[in-house]
Length: 177
Image: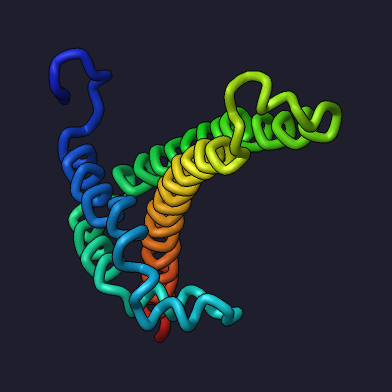
């Protein structure tokens, strides 16, 4: 088991599937294409899984996972969960640091001393709001990354559940007289 120089060794087959999955679930695709798909109309239903099972990237991803054995799927379940958890923590921390605290500071200072921003060179509050809006865009992109990471974890958990169901069904068929 070898990985590119400097990385911790993992199963190369699993890591190849992982790289392919991350390309299928690219953040930019979520940002660019998702708002213009029919799937957006189904976001307000209580059945999100049927919607996902019809999407192209989920079908392709399930096909990629089909070549892995049970141990590799178990590893990938843990891997994707760790990835999703870390991505979400990074998003939450960043959102707190670059949006929540500065916005609260801007409005708090404005309430305390309405002329403060003019005194330090921001004669127009529009400029400051523009900067904060930029920070919010960065947070939005990070939220999309957390969303995609969670999608990957959900996908691999679904494949593990599908395999368990298939195994159970096959066992029942073989136990019938």
